[in-house]
Length: 229
Image 1 (cartoon, helix red, strand yellow):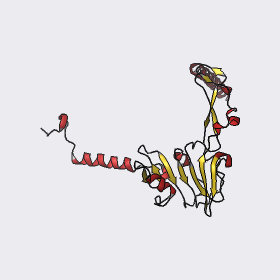
Image 2 (cartoon, rainbow, N blue to C red):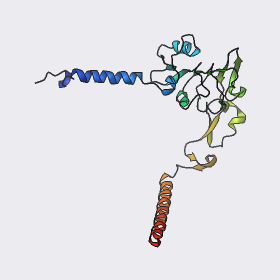
Image 3 (cartoon, one colour):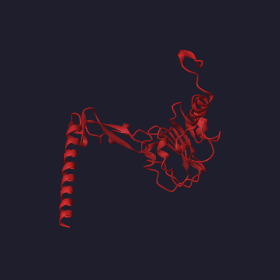
Image 4 (spheres, rainbow, N blue to C red):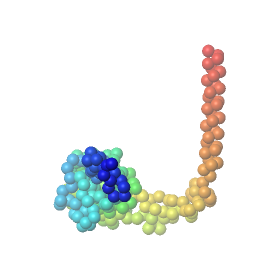
């Protein structure tokens, strides 16, 4: 009989242990695509590296500063020859600090940072505007080689902007220069005027019956055409 380990479980053969070790290493090395979009790693003197080293539990991996859950808190894509942040940029929506300096960025970044609610420090090339403009940041500092947008403002704290939401809705920030209105509990629909839960059964029932009726009509039409030919 094969020797057994604790709790009566058979010991794993060496190849199984090696396989588990390899799989664990692969999971540990897996990074969001945006972290490896640019070759190299974060320089020790960069703002992202300095921020990451302030908290022992944070980790520098490739171009990212990650917390223990793998969320991106810092992203350094400086000097990556980027004309735009790229399709994977939204993976960094949890970032607190982002550095994009020394890139030939051409496009307007206004909509690029929608949903980046936690962003507090954004370093950009000198000729690129801070998303949301001066009203979206506490300070915008110009340097010789870059520009720093510091302290994202919550537009919902402004009385003028908060009045844009309906009575049954609440204003929430949605990135630099953006806000959105969310309906309160039990309200939905246009301007949050409808009360009660959304009638899913009725909605899908009508949708299903309409789809079935159209399908039957199309089938009958095609069948008559086939007989006529």
